Image (cartoon, rainbow, N blue to C red; front, top):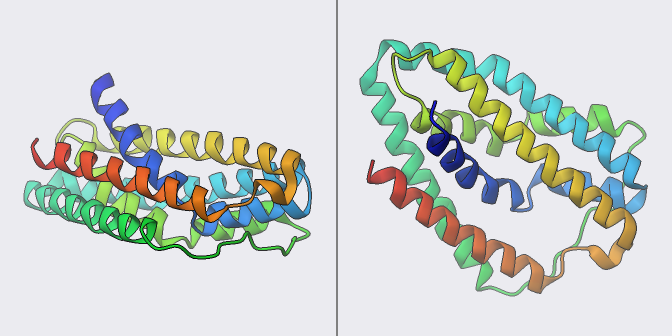
Amino acid sequence: MDIHTLLLFAATVLPLICVPGPDMLFIASQAVTGNAHAGLQATAGVCLGYVLHSLLVALGLAAVIATSPVLFHAFRWMGVLYLIWLAAKLLRSALQPRRVAWPTTQTTSPLRRGFFTAALNPKGMMIYFAILPQFMHAGHAVALQAMLLSAIFIALCALVYSVLSMALARTGRAGGPSDRRRRCVEGVSGGMLIVAAARLASN
């Protein structure tokens, strides 16, 4: 795979990772109510959950793509529509003020809980089913491509969530998601997803 494709994939999934969801909220709750170590343990669990997705989903998806170019293009357009839908949802939410807060419950096993949080996260499943196929070239070692893209996604998750854990552990509840921060993140992420969808649709 060329570097341009890998960078485009990273730019597409990064705003999805940065939008608060089950993974981020759980990791943040551990860092805020515990410490950086608890947050990093939760991060490791989340990444392991996505490794499981990589093994169970990416390889099966590769087999489908290898045998059906029609399905390849169907997945591609499903991904474009998903990005547009998610972007519209984020932009609409960014325009609506509301009170937000991290969960405050600390678990005694953040690694295990983080694993199940990611393994059962529908957002992660959508990335594999609807977005990942768009960056793969049918007939060119699709299984290897799927695993490489999965590795990029997991590495970005590890980076973003590790930084979040250390930042929240240092600042405590003051680093929580204020409404202004939430609206800024959602607005920027929504805009990035529209650009990504337009770029993918034009290919």
